[in-house]
Image (cartoon, rainbow, N blue to C red; front, top):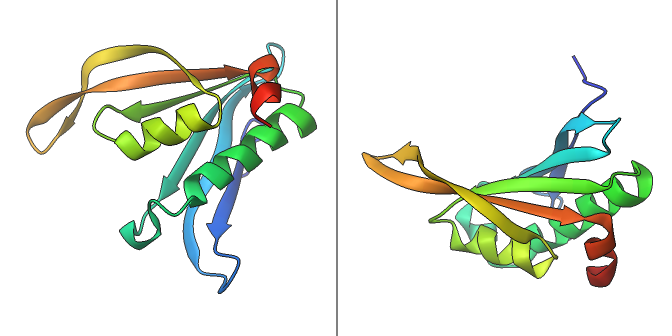
Length: 125
């Protein structure tokens, strides 16, 4: 069932139309004009090629222009340096972290919180 509070899109390459991931806005709070963003590119062969940055630019534009959002938030795990770089490249600001909240393969990692306001996004678009 499709939710009126989320928009999810598939990511495909332009050259050969291969499905490489997804991006979306979810937990939209229409009254407050807030949403959370999520992105995933599964195959490492498509990492570090700009697909994530391009997808983030597109979803932020959709959120701010088409959905009239004011704020979009996102999280990433502290070891995901590519995601941190991509967030900062498109204008997200690091807002905080939740210490040792993610457990992977017996290790604990921080969850990093990011946010971007429409007024900040305008500077990067």
